Image (cartoon, rainbow, N blue to C red; front, top):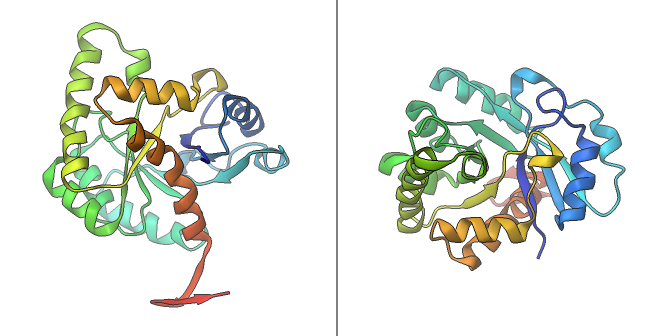
Length: 227
C-alpha cells in the first residue's frame, strides 16, 4: 500500500525545506508527500531539489486561504488547471461549506481548527462534489486535558457524518517540521482512539495518491481523455 502525507507545510510556510520533509517521510514509510503551502506564502523554497530525493514522490499542491466564499471559488478555479492538488484552509463554517461545494477542491483541510466542523449541509455537498475531508491529527498530538477532549468530541461527530454520507477521507499531521511527522502506523493508532476502523485509516492514507493521478489526467470533454 502506498501511503501519502497530504497536507505538509515547508519553507517559507513551515520551518523545514521540502527535501528535509521528504527524507523524514521516506524514513517513516511514506511513498509520497504533498506540500500544500498557504497560497499567501508562495512557492516552497527548494522544491526542485526535493523532487530529486529517491524513493518518495514529492508533489506540490496549494492550500487556499480565503476570507469569503467568492474569493475561494475564484482562487480554486484559477489554480485548477495547473495544480496536482488543491486544499482549502478550513475552520470557519462558511469557508468549510464553500470548499465542499466547489468541485475544483480536492481537500478541506483541518475543518475543526475553529471547532466549526462540517455539518450536514457541507457533508452532502462534499459527497456530491467528491471533496475529501481531512482528519488533521495535529491537535490530538499537541493538545492536553479538556481541550483535547472537546476536540475529539467534535471530530467524532463529523466522523459519524463521514460514515453516513460515505465521504472521502484523508489523514494528515499537518506538519510544519520534520519533527511533527508521524509514521502511518502511529496514525492508525491515533485514529483508533477516535473510533476509526483500521481499514478506513489505511484507505485514507492511500487516497491522495489516487486523487493526484486523476488530477494529472487531461480531459478534452466529459469522458474523453487526452493521451
